[in-house]
Length: 358
Image 1 (cartoon, rainbow, N blue to C red):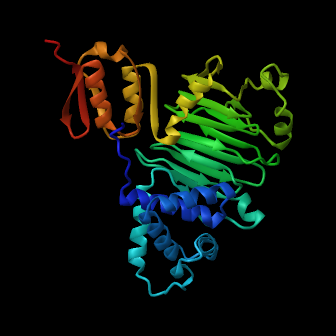
Image 2: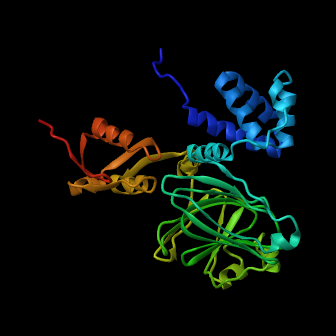
Image 3: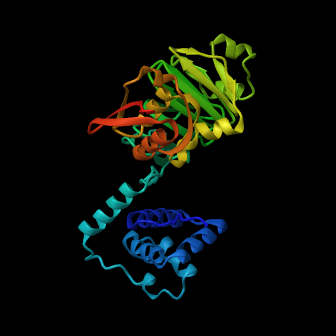
């Protein structure tokens, strides 16, 4: 019998309630309605949290949705009193955003074609934070820890600059406005696709395509609408692709760019793809990477930095599944499984060494 007991903190319940309220505001699918009802019925605290938050949200679509799902709940259709303490409301929403590990960016989008054509905004995440944003054209962007993304839409193109970090882009189709992500000294143009870009340095990048295909070029190459239509059926053997010294990466492939040089494209297994994208669920998966590389990846999600007192530890191959930012769990695993002891040299510095075998 398992002795593991699942429980949720008040902050976690409020974060879940916030996501459900946001989903109701845009409209629940049939499957989502069933999932929401199941979640509410799990715990009275779930129901209390979502109804309290609905009163603060004060959106007719949300109130109507709750009324149809829970017709016996008397308080939901009562008008909201405008004398509500807005400092309390603000603190509630601030707590929800902090508690939520992944949240959807809700903003007032441009409403006219002219406004949408000139949309610009900067999105960022802090160390250890992940966030999902929906752009005005319905493109979905998920940013990993410590990322900075500049978005600039014009009438003829959609251009984004990933200044640091990592992002996943589920691109809305718009043949009239090509979608390009610039990172370091490379540009990644979507050809109807879902892809992931990680910037390790200006000249060291990673591209993983999970749907459609992406063209890698130098930033000086500008793709217009006519080019876009032709490139959708292009491959690496196409003359127009060779002429601009581009590389096309298709679904299930990964491109590594080291010191500005694009290495041979790699075909990944399903497990490889899942491992590379595990960060989207707040998980880090290692499968034979050197310990030095694994610790470097872990450090992206926390202020903690690692020092290897014994240089031989750097090449030690490691494997395991860890929650991003869970330094205690990582150190315990290293001690139990690999006899690697640690010493804290400061608030954010951990030294690792081989344990005594005596």
